View 1 (cartoon, rainbow, N blue to C red):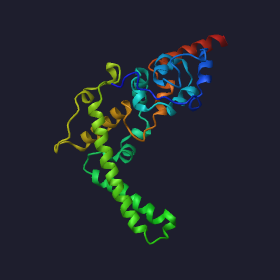
View 2 (cartoon, rainbow, N blue to C red):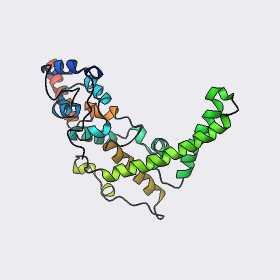
View 3 (spheres, rainbow, N blue to C red):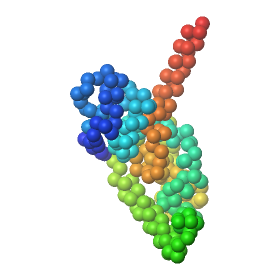
Length: 242
């Protein structure tokens, strides 16, 4: 697990620390500082800040660092439970093709490489150079190498993860608790389920590249108690109207 001390030291101008401290009614010399120790500051004041201030912490913390905060892990889990479009199979397979190990894995990676070649041919300098063909082949090869390296790196990170998200028992299923290892006997549906489970775990651990963490980390909509609070506010408003 990443330690509490793993935080990014930044200049005060990178984040509106004075505005954040003023919002909370804290002195200018308050420690931990949102600029010098953002993770520890979030650990203490995460639930007290509105989204427009919280989102500024994306510039000074990484998704992996923020995973040390249970409230953020739980928000990510609730966000995934809502079935966001990026995490539906077709879109996810195209975005994280290096993690897809189904029968069409090579087809997907090959298509991404072909897209790089097509861009070089049709878009790069409007295709008006004798080196375009060589560039296309080079970019296509790079894309395949990138996908392979990303796959290796993400798997290493997954093996190094030392904690799991804090979730209710109702959020887990027997299938999720007993992942099926990839074998030649794996059915297409099982391969899809395993792939989706892997990318969701990577997302919760802050290790999934090209993922929109802002949509989950800073939105109180994904708090476990958000629905209950919304109901209470609705009843309060209804009572005021009477």
